[in-house]
Image (tube, rainbow, N blue to C red; front, side):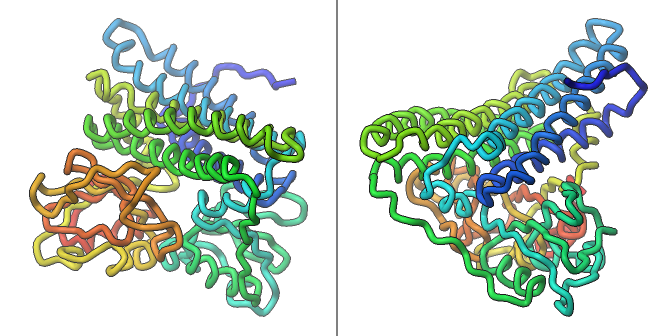
Length: 433
C-alpha cells in the first residue's frame, strides 16, 4: 500500500528538476533491466516509480497553493503538463520493468537487439588493482573525459540509482555504464581488467519478428530523443523544437501500428507465441513515452509559453541542455561531428542541429528515422539516425553530419562538457549552462 502524502512547503523548481532526472533515469534503467534480465534493477525501477508518485503529488499541491487568479492558472498550466508527462514516463518505465519482474517473457532476438537501442549498456564489476578501483566519479570526470556515463551502481545488496561525484568505485562494486561502443569497451577494461565482449544478436527465424524488434529499437530511440527535444523546447522557448517533438510522436505512432501488425503475423509462425507478450509491453510503453514528450512541450505549442520555474529546473538537473552557435573559423566550422569527435572529447551528445540558413550546407533530402541516415549505430558517436526536416533541423545527427558557421547545436551532457563544447564552437557562450 502506498504511504500517505501530506502537504509540506517544497521548492517546485527542485521537485521539477528531480522529476526530470528521475524520469530520464527510469528510461535507462527499465531498458537496462530487460537487457540484463536483472530483477534487482527492475525492482529499483519500481521503487523509483513510487518515489515519482510522491514527487508529482507534492508538486501538484504546491501549484494549487500558488494559483490565486486566472492569470496564475494560465501561467502554471504548462508546469502541470510537465509534471503529468514525467509521471507518464515513470509509469511506462514501470511497465517495462514488469516484463522482468513478472517474467512476462521476451524473444531472445529482442533482448540482444536492445544494446543498439541503448547505445551500449554494460555491467562491469570493479576489480582490485584496476585503474578505476577506489576512484571517485568526480575525480575520474568519467562522462566528460570518455563520453561514458555511470547510470547506476550496485554494492552490498543495494543499488545507487543516482551516483554523484563523491561516489567511489570500490572493488566489488558493480556499475552500469552507458555510451558509445568503443568508449564503453575502454571503461569496461579499466574497471574489470578484461576485454568487453558485446552480446550477439541471434537469428530469430522470422522476418516479421525481426521487423518488430527493429521497430521497437527505433521507437525507443525516437521517444527518448523526443523527450530531450521537448525539454529543449521549453528551455529555449522554441516553437520549432516543439513542432519537431510532435513530428517524432507521429512517426512513433506510425511505427507502433506497423509493429503491432508484424507482431501479430509473427505470433502465428513462432513456436511459443506467449513469449511475444513482453514485446507487446515494450511497444505500448515506448509509445506512451513519446506521447509524454508532446505533453512536456504543450505550453510552447499552444502559445502559452513556459513558466520560468520550468527552465530553471531543467538547468538544475543532472544533465544540462545547451544551445551553442558555431562561429566562423572555429574548430567546428566545416567539419563533421565524427571528424571532430565531439562526444568523446567533450562528453556532450548533440541531439539536434539547426542550420544557419535553408541553403547553407543543409541536406536537401527529407529522411525518415526508419530509413537511411547520416550515420549508424556502430559509430564513434554512439549512433543516432540523422534526418533533415524542412532543410532547417537535423534531428539526432550522426558522425557524417557536417557543421557550418552559424549552425545552432542543441546538446546534452555535463556542465564541464558544455564549456568544452562552447570552446570548440568558438562563441564563448551557451544558453544552457
